[in-house]
Length: 119
Image 1 (tube, rainbow, N blue to C red):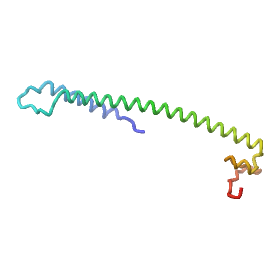
Image 2 (cartoon, helix red, strand yellow):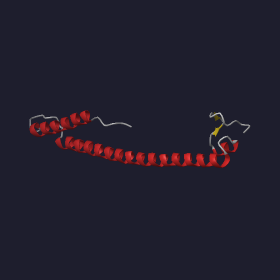
Image 3 (tube, rainbow, N blue to C red):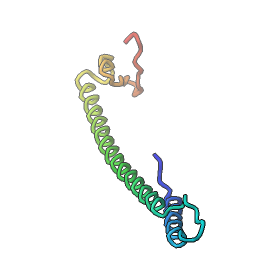
């Protein structure tokens, strides 16, 4: 995730403001460069601000979507833990049948037995 750099934004935004103000103050001078137009700088400033606002809104939306995802993931993990417990209670914790459900088989010595192709 990319974070916006507020210092860079503020610097550029303020420079655009000063540039537009300077152009407005001096555009009537003889041979003033035609490429320097105040409305263009003001529009760039507006576009920059709108783009930043849009990015921040999308970031908030993404954060909310992640929170929803994390909640569903937690719910799924909790349900699977309950299912594992139910299967171990039904079949026994060391019964290889529970491996068919993706549940880890726990041998009598307290260790875990990985499922092998022969199981």
